[in-house]
Every structure is written in C-alpha cells, then in structure tokens.
Image 1 (spheres, rainbow, N blue to C red):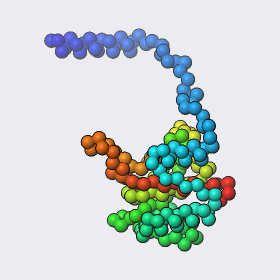
Image 2: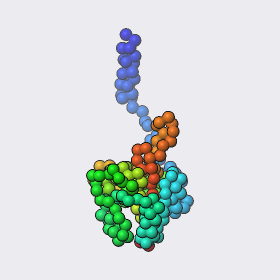
Image 3: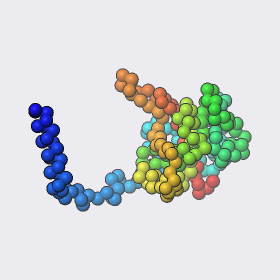
Image 4: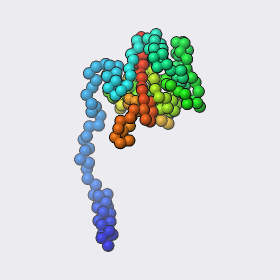
Length: 215
C-alpha cells in the first residue's frame, strides 16, 4: 500500500508539473560568450605548450625540408623498420623524402609507428581531432604504439567548440561516422589507480606542425 501511495504521489507531482508550466529561471543565460579566456599567445605556441604539458612530443617545421629532417631523425633514433602510412598525400611526401613506409591495412603485428594527418588541432587543450574520413581510418591512430601526426598551422583552432564548428563547415550534413579527440598519449588508472601509459592506444604521440605560410 505504501509503495502504491508513493507512486501515486510521484505521478501526481509529474502531472501537476506538466499542467502548470513555469518560466525557466535560466531563460536569459548567455550561451554564446566564451567560457575560457582568449589565447594570450599565438595558436601554434598555445598548442605546443598544452600538448607538451600532457605528454606529447612537438616539432615545429618551417618547411618540408625541416619536416623531412625531423622525420628521418625520429625514425633513425628509434630504429623503426615498419612505419605505417595509408594516406596518399602523406605517402607522396614520404616518397619525395625517400623515407620508407608500409601500406598494409590487414597486417599490424609488426608495426612500430603510424603516420597520419588530422582534421584540426585544438590549441587550448593540445587536442588532435581525427575522423574516419581520413584514409588512415579508425585502426591506425589507435593501434600504432607510436602515433605521428603531420599537421599545418592553418588547421589550428583555439577551443574544441571552434574545432567542431570547423568540422561542421567542412562536412556540412555529411559528417564522418567517427570523430575522435586525442589529448596526449593513451593513459588509464583503472588498475589499482596506477597510471599506465599506452594501455589502450599509443604510448607516444608526436605532432609535426608545418608552417602553412612557408611550406
């Protein structure tokens, strides 16, 4: 009986609330004004500082020659033999640089690193926006133990809302089936609250930022 009475009381309150609608106390809330302070530095510097702070490895390249030198040095330093790349524009760049790569979307057992582009970079949080529209797909950015991202300064957006607005402008009503935000190397503390890097994805993330005004 008590349960029935409690249920009736709840339903009565719901019916009353639906009939007697009150004005929203938050009708004049401002949803347009940015919550965060505007960037004090240039977007590339803001991104670099935020990205490094979350464990990312950042390289700024004024031109393709510096990009080539940086990639070559990185591959030689780590002795990578199986660097995967699926995007045609990147493969052309790697060919011009005489850097070897693997284009095999079915065999990932010996992968050392994966090289991809991205959609946009979010400067305030050091975030990389990726989507399934890229030829690198869903698997390479998540499966590679080291993720190397090649981006240009014209892909920089200040905040996540700016990045999403840029995606909306780019794709309109036909968004990719997956959009993901990568903020630093993969990390988890689910196991006994111990921080583990690389448990569910890349343990290292590099961003080579190419100056679009000089490339």
